Length: 438
Image (cartoon, rainbow, N blue to C red; front, side, top):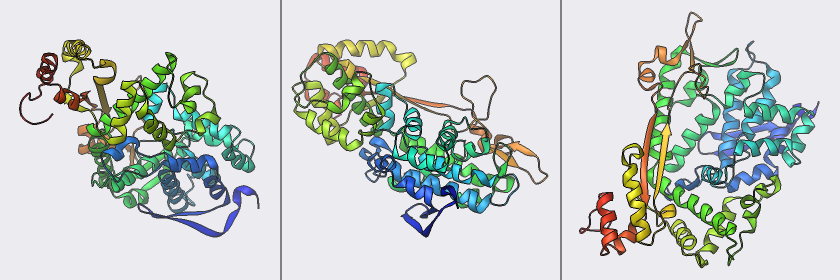
């Protein structure tokens, strides 16, 4: 028996609040979980700054990755097993790709990536193909196995059915994070009947299809996703924390470029600031490292960096008002001038943040991003795109919702509201000048 087929003497299980248990019997999977690159995901929160809004949202990329693996394992071992359309030779590859799909995420991932123009998917590929413990395990399966795993995650692998298990509009990744994020945030929006969806999944040529009898469970899943994005992922308080986090990183980089002498030197950030980040440097970064610097930088002489770090650490977040950039751009310019007059740098204290989501769409030729549709398998064998059969999905298909907020330090305005320029700022923002706090 080769390494790829080796089983553990006794099945290992992880007690899981979403799936009850995560089952591991394959030696390869167990060895991958034990690598330092995978264990690092314990120190990366799944929802970034969301814990500052929903206090229970402390779960990690590690727990999510195990959950995605478990869903894929169940699909291929329980639902697809022995079906002629499914190649059982792709079993281990599918499970490894599911387990490792988020391997390259960094601390406070999406904010971090935006500031420094990084892409976690690039680092996922580097970890899988580079000189790492993960690569060492995968290479024991076969010399070309690491590349196959990376190709599945990159969506370039030849077997599109395998890709669709972890990357499509109804995949194991989304099915896990919606339920897991709902559980840990304490909301009800992300719950749907996953058991029903798994039972009606079928392998078909290049993707997973859903038996028509399961259409209503899929409708529920899509609406759950829609609600989670607007009630949890795009929550304005979470976005306020992300704005401050991003501005901390921007300020630290700007100070470094200006040869500012840090009281607490950002050694872990030098290679990022100087555009020479290596994989080894990247893997040393986790959220504990970031929070250490944020706490240390409260003592910096630079008042902006110190203030922003104190705000993030103590949850003294920015306030916000609704804002339409297309109609109110003149207002933004006017506010910027007034902020400067008031001694508040608008680069750091007046920020427009936008959120946008497309809950479901089918592929439209010529569009930038290919969105493979969800297909239903009818009793007569015909395959139909979901929105053609579901009035609920048709009603939201292709409809992008966008939201804009203008963030600012309401506490500072409140403290200085006797000053004429501050009172003018508050009038423009539509804030109450006399009654209560902002």
